[in-house]
Length: 169
Image (tube, rainbow, N blue to C red; front, side, top):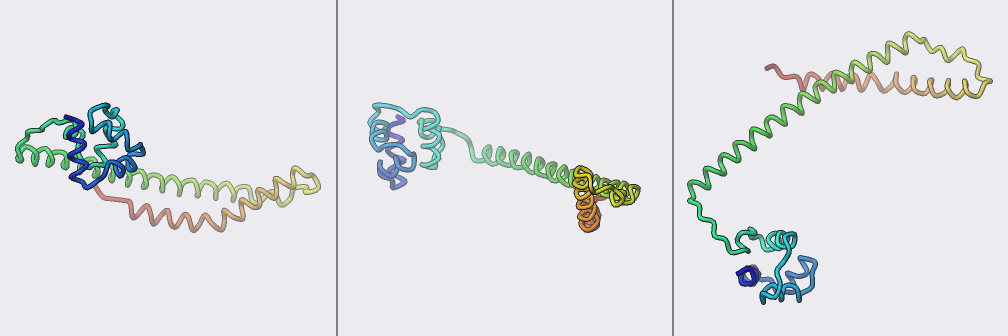
């Protein structure tokens, strides 16, 4: 029955054995053997075959699924309801995660600013004739210089993001 179904569905799709073989990445002789009933595709190949032929595996295997249209519509309706609920929960969770991540980002920026203010650029008085102190001073100065210029922009963006993601419940 599998061999007849493969052949009939392949022909109904207007595919030759060679075209089907190319789409499945196999040789034409393999398709011929399937259609003659000399061999059968393994489970992975059966799934690939069903995808290429755009036919359920159950149809290839010859099963007939008897369901009334009302039952089918009800089942689809229930599945869509579950999917919609899951998508809504994901959206809410992503919004909350973004909200709290932005609050955390703002907090970190404020803490780093407070630390930099407390240190009062103490590296400016360091002895730069010592190579280790010189490298550390340059690194610290570069961080402070970049942070003081970029952090306010990030902070403003994060605050705007907090207001955009904040939702009254």
